[in-house]
Image 1 (cartoon, rainbow, N blue to C red):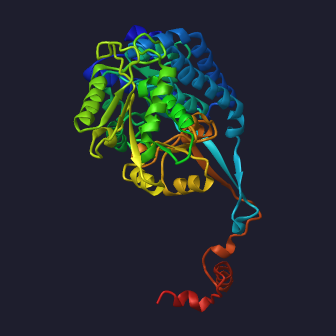
Image 2 (cartoon, rainbow, N blue to C red):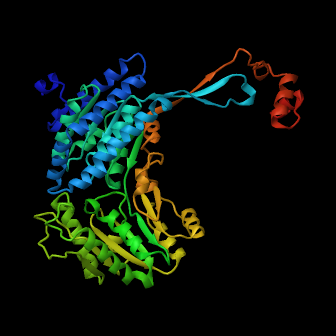
Image 3 (cartoon, rainbow, N blue to C red):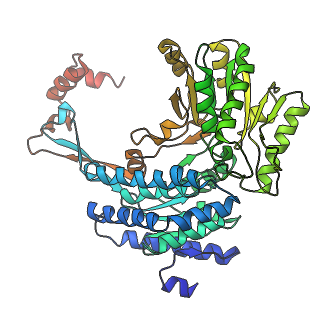
Length: 499
């Protein structure tokens, strides 16, 4: 550890109490370095940090892609490049383009009573940001919050997911090559480190993962009154309206559901379709699957399940549905051998599930898609609202009135109309859940704001007259308060109000 610290390393892997002490030391170093500054970092310093991160991502992209692939036992290179590396680089470019504007003090209107004084809002860095990444997109969901933290002028301590140890090491190598340890550090995780990490007195903590773990993280953070951003998940529905082109809807849903083998927090978790169209939808989805995945095992475009535990969970849920009488289609066009050993879980369509089936109650987080028939739009809305509020909602319809009805009657983290997941890629839209699917937002300017203190500043004018607002309260004050209340008040009434 001493050798690593002397070389500016940001990688820590120790166990038990020694682990906690080392993590605490990393945090203390970050906090001390931040507090030693006389003023917040300049725009030029923040742009330089973002530049370094961008250049390192490009320079080490092969190592990063290889690490993710190794953690998954087979992860589509195209998906890692498109959904993670490109997303990060594009976000950095957007931040750099707008950062100077965001950092400028923002003038806001002053209440009439206090004019000609002026008001403004200044965004100031919070301090040390804790970032807890997720395994499904271990680069994007770890470094995207870091981009926002750097743009806002903070220091950061990062804990990647314990399920992606190779990516954690690659991230640590990347970070220690461009940033001092007291500026940004990566704590290489072990399975029991979440509690110790979230118990540190961060100035803001962001966690991406499941709702059960999110509750524990929030409880730990509460002891320090640490504000949290929780990016969770839930059962994100895709709803197909009567008359909408089934082929188009199936193409969008299949793409969004089966990228990364369904291990995407905003993937469609179930599909609601008019009852009479359910068989036709199954047929269209089979066709889309055959075009996208002509093979599974012998196909570098189809990703693997992260580990045996998650694989077995998915298999158990499908078996439960099948034993309960549901129809199940396991898409495997070449009848390849798929199992826990190779991590290949076939795209699976399920219909006719009982409402108490795990596939309809729990977030699936894998390549299994339940299809549910509905009677009318109101029935679909009621089915969505029976469950916790989801992270995303997808609706396929060309009828504006029905679209407005659905948007008004449901609540979710985000929405894409006539497509899936695209709202997440928009810089000017906040990303975040609501209720059980998350707390807080980030992406773009919302990241900058999430990791900044919106500091209100009032500049009192020498011409501001507040004499009438101060005791002793006489007839002049009675006239003033009567004017403000738009009700005449006498000096005698002021005393009378007491009784």
